[in-house]
Length: 85
Image (tube, rainbow, N blue to C red; front, side, top):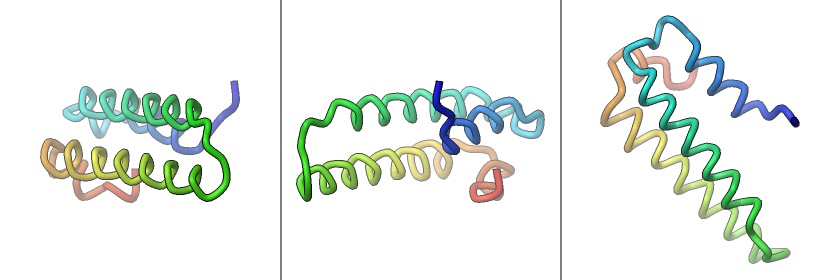
């Protein structure tokens, strides 16, 4: 299996004892990551169209993670550590 930094980072955070109150939220983030990867993998477009589609998928995933999960549901600790964890 190929290691990817985002996946490895999410798995490390899920197993971090400092975020125990956010474990289910982080597991949802991991599911969202896996879904995002499956969406990107299923694209059949090429060239500029592919770049546009990949960018749209990335932006949707980023908004879900940062706004829907972390900002609205995350603990104060998780919110303050957004970039560090």
